[in-house]
Amino acid sequence: MKSLLIVFFILVVGVLVGFTVLNSAKNEVNERILIEEFVPVTVKENTVNVSSIELINRGTMKASWYGPKFHGKLTANGEIYDQMALTAAHKNLSFGTLLKITNPKNGRSVIVRINDRGPYIQGRDLDLSKGAAIELGILKKGVAKLKIEEVALGKTSNPTAIVN
Image (cartoon, rainbow, N blue to C red):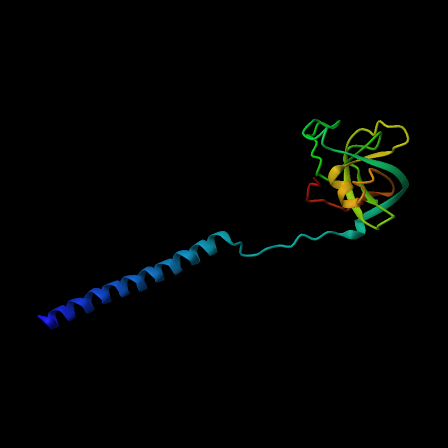
């Protein structure tokens, strides 16, 4: 009777171990299928031809920032204003114009996209989003003279990403 019990115990343990090994092998196959199915075979790297980008000096402009009161409302070009996006308002630059803005006091720069009209306070040339003001380090001061360069894309440039 004792030997029968030992044989039965060995059979039960053997079946459980065999099932676990088979199940484990099955999981490895399933993982391999998932990896092969969802990981691309080749990943192509996007390249940018930087020689087709030109920075046009637009001088200095007195800039302020706007945010909370206008957040979620429509901009002049019909977008919903996001105060943390890197955008700006100008009285007459075309919508979509890209500007590289540099704070000469700390050397920090940011590229913004014109999507709104303003500022409407005399003596100011540019209204930055709150996000741009934070990046430039002018949030606390509120107003600053900044170096402005227009980012011009050359004829051979084919941008593949949307800015903001």
